[in-house]
Length: 134
Image (cartoon, rainbow, N blue to C red; front, side):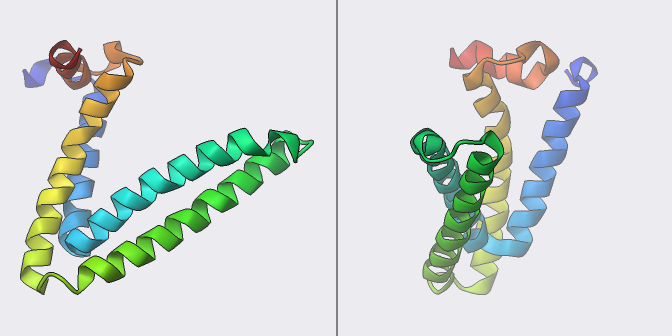
């Protein structure tokens, strides 16, 4: 199986390792805050992009405004979630659960790629997951 890997699969594996190490150091509260903040900033950016076309004449000002709103939403959600969850877990449990959540988040990358269905020929992992997903 490993001989069938393509360069995108090694990038996915490296991303999974980065998420695992990030989860170990940031803990569960940091990983949960990162995941929720990423989703909420994506939603805010999408909604902001659709709503801002009547207010901005130039494309670059519209993109800059949406980027700023998405970054502010990311920061606010990350701070709120991290503060709420950080007090619930002791430090060793927070690190272990953070490592596990980092591994799960890294494993969700090929699943998300398989659900998108885009450029599956560039990744053996994503194409194999796509066979089971859809």
